[in-house]
Image 1 (spheres, rainbow, N blue to C red):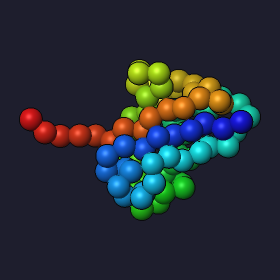
Image 2 (spheres, rainbow, N blue to C red):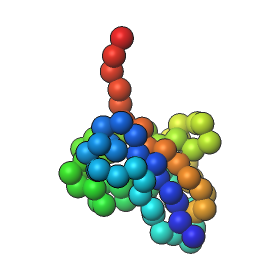
Image 3 (cartoon, rainbow, N blue to C red):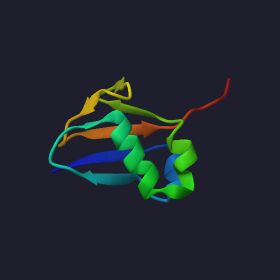
Length: 81
């Protein structure tokens, strides 16, 4: 099983890919998923650690769990007006 992580905006552009797969057989915390992405994509690691993980239209706290067969979104901070 695996967690599919969709990347958005500057993360997707910096990583030059739209998704990343976290192979796992058990649920992972949002922080573990974020750390995995930062390790896999060191060029955008700083931005990854300022991003939020969302699952099923809700942002997750760092200790909330992501199902091992789920798909989540990693959304970087945005600005604008």
